[in-house]
Image (cartoon, rainbow, N blue to C red):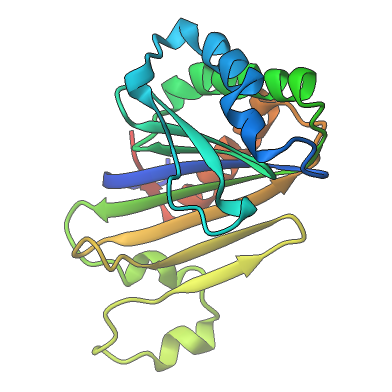
Length: 219
């Protein structure tokens, strides 16, 4: 079995963005029937008025949103005029089901109440990884061409790479926030018909693939 190095995760984040085909409701509807319906749909997660806020300093319509904060303050659900956004700090795959249910409940309200149609879905997963034993340069050398690796001198502390596909991209770089750590980010776009569960499975597969290439394990 191939030897792997365990890595701690001092900080990570997950983002989900559902972009509407067109803004089909006015700015005040966020504080009227739509607000009430979303608030009711989030009751299974013990939402209260203390968990609801709005952007009081919106400079234009794209910055008008209402925020619902869940999961002990780690998840922000922002409902705007042109998109729905979920931001979750320090996610765990055991939370994939409740996050999927929150997204599904909110989108269902938007589709029924505001007749929103989704044009595209995008997700991002970012992780700061701290390998045990220190030193991060070697974990990215396997991505590099042999000729590039050969000319790197001993003063190089880290190597960053970016890989792009039609629907996704990977970035592996030196973490600027945590010493002796890598920063890994996965971005992926999905069709509007993909369920949140299918999106989660695809993102998990990409996370596994990039950890395999880095020869790192996080559990």
